[in-house]
Image 1 (cartoon, one colour):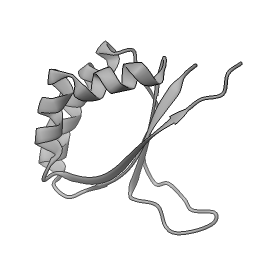
Image 2 (tube, rainbow, N blue to C red; image 1 turned 90 degrees about the vertical axis):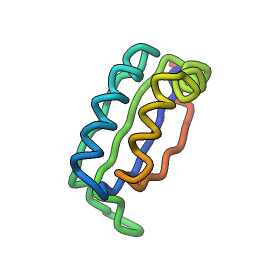
Image 3 (tube, helix red, strand yellow; image 1 turned 120 degrees about the vertical axis):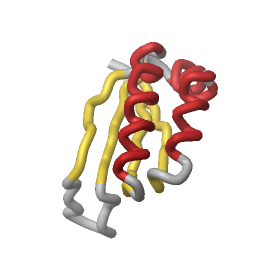
Length: 97
């Protein structure tokens, strides 16, 4: 069953965030992930204003997400992100077809 990483992000340092993205994207693809939503201008139709950017990444399953998040490649990317982006990241299971 597919699983999703859902991220709300506010960029604090655009240059450093670009370095993070360039490091993170190959690690995501290497673990079977693909971006479904990637970008700015999320609009709240109900509730609080969302962060400036919303990202949704689909993986084949939750285990692939765990392996990606713990991978040496993404660990290095997270270090780049530390001062560049403030975010909330959650994992959710998809719907079985």
